[in-house]
Length: 264
Image (cartoon, rainbow, N blue to C red; front, side):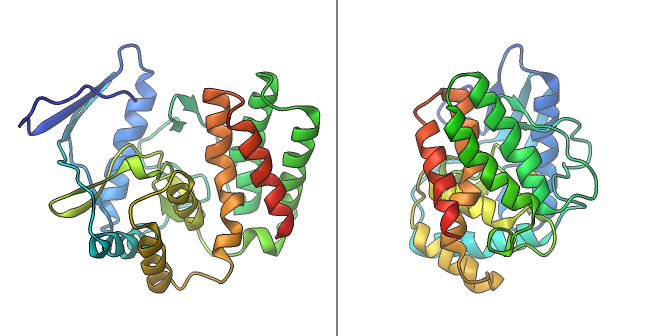
């Protein structure tokens, strides 16, 4: 969703996209409330909403200190630990799920994480990318092999998830602001999933003191060994979304990530 810049000193921030699908606004608002209830990372307060806008408390963003980055990592563990009813479950009252300007496919109830990730986060966007001409047939074969391994619940790929975590779902560094009280989450695509998906998104475009964030997270969560090797798998979803939204620049990176999954 787009942003309307706030005037200097304005205590609120109004996000508005004329003509936006109202379900995307409802989904984001529901995600903010759901993440806030987790009691982990602070979430930007939602002050008001309408069919095509949200009114949020303004956050004065600055670069975090190493200690603030570590606290963010520990708080993120608590957010994830709040859980979700199922893999792919959306926040209460959300309706349709969205990632940026793309609607998310519904998730069959009772599915495992591997099958959820293959069927609802990889395959639909592979097909969309292929239809848009971003992927060749050979590219699709590489990505389909990853999906087949996920469908088979190969341990190397599905390690690290015992139950659905409460994910931000679009946790790149631009959606983590650091204000006077530390980290603040904005712009979620919240759902139930694998905690390492959020961590991989943080790593995809870089984040301040990322090594400190990840080390603090792993220490607090007891993350299973090999998380770094699994990062390309969890980056497939955001890379596919970027391929569909922005074209072939991201397609080659997506296929490389899929090939890296072959080492698992």
